[in-house]
Length: 220
Ligand SMILES: C[S@@+](CC[C@H](N)C(=O)[O-])C[C@H]1O[C@@H](n2cnc3c(N)ncnc32)[C@H](O)[C@@H]1O
Image (cartoon, rainbow, N blue to C red; front, side, top):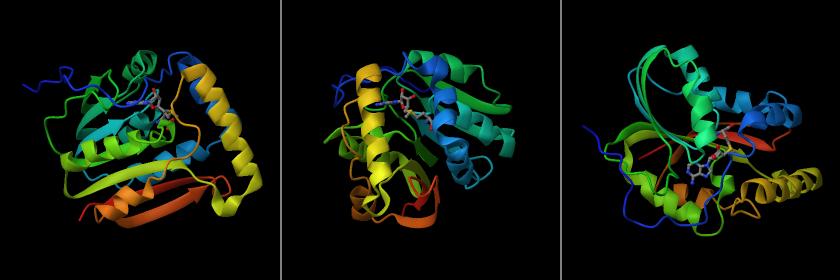
């Protein structure tokens, strides 16, 4: 029996809460980004092999679970760690076929992960984190990904100093800081830890005029 009890270690960073936006988060993201977020998810989940053990951190309302289920209707063991209770409630209503899903309503910093995974998915998670949290979360997840495992990563980027992308980011951060109390004020550097730990890019794609990107990293 796996023990997912809270670890005694204090989590790093302040607690964001997406509870306030959970009921309309997906509609809002569709209004602003059209289908770009879903396309970014789809690009990632097609890299998942049958019968994988998958960890999803910050999965939101569970849209990504439905995308995964369309490809693998059974055989996956999914651990779904999500900080917002309201987002977890929505996720539990999503169709997951005959895949086994364990929902953990905790920040990923606090969750006890006592097994290794073939695939880790962090879809638009790291952009919530302030200065030190990305490194902390990376160092927590890296050891539980099996050698040759896949880290499926999606987030925003500012492509070539683009002015409207910078403007949109500012507005997004202002909104999510006020409404969800997120730590971040700017995009963290997420490339360095992957490079430092020898991850290779297996595939990469950009969406929404390169403002959004998805990367399939492979652990060496
Ligand atoms: C920007 S939303 C992205 C939602 C979803 N992944 C998507 O792509 O539509 C970020 C999600 O990460 C969750 N989150 C933020 N900080 C977290 C943490 N430390 N641990 C786990 N989940 C977290 C939020 O509750 C929210 O659901």
